[in-house]
Length: 349
Image (cartoon, rainbow, N blue to C red):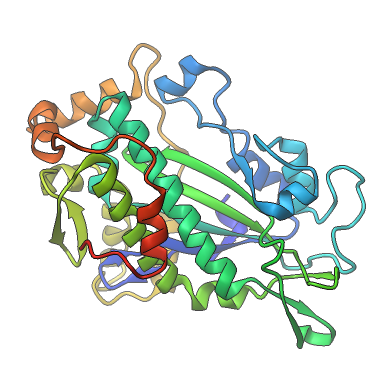
């Protein structure tokens, strides 16, 4: 899949931004379907054992307009990446995409959140997943308001608002990094087509996604903190220039950050200081160290493995959960915190 992604790593000093933007190149629909759709688990046992991921889901008015809803089918996903209406086979817009088929906006929470998800009981894991969904929705809502612009006319000079139908969006939430570490993250795939108010369709202005990436990242993080504070009562502490859940040991976060360690080591091997590395250098290092995802054994569930790894690293899962989770928390939907964060009304850290 690496050949089909450009600009996939957003590097901010020594930190990877938790929201990043990548282009899926036109002509790579087959590889994209294999990466996003074919990794889906075939049954519940495989999912809980760590084989594959949950199915992708269509989102938004544009998808509904095309008759797309629920789980993402491989044929439908391939069709829209190829610029075709999945029902009629007709082109989605007059000019086919020659360079970019879609944009992958990926949202990855700070490691302590994934660590909590890895060790928590079912109810708390569900709250983490729901908080992630709400935060991603808030972030995509921001992009819809500020970066949903169609480029019509010669050289795209006729810029039209596409927010009425919004992005044609498929969403895939994965649980692990390529090294098998817990890393909850969501790929929001924005197909490279928008519809103007007058019904004309054209490619979206991808440059705006990059321009708004940092703001989107900040809003996503604020919304996620608000959701988790409301749902699970967690507290926050500042570490390495970002907010982490208090009570999750920094050493465990480092133990479960093998991909970041690989990237920083690859940068250092080239004589590049990870603290000052450019996004392009970090991207090169990420691609050079990327390989197939690690899978767990047949007889061990994913979360059993995480508990075993935590104990082996010297961190007792029960003690961690007692330190991170608090009593008297709200376990219901928490949509208001994400909306408040999106509107700039979040007073949490």
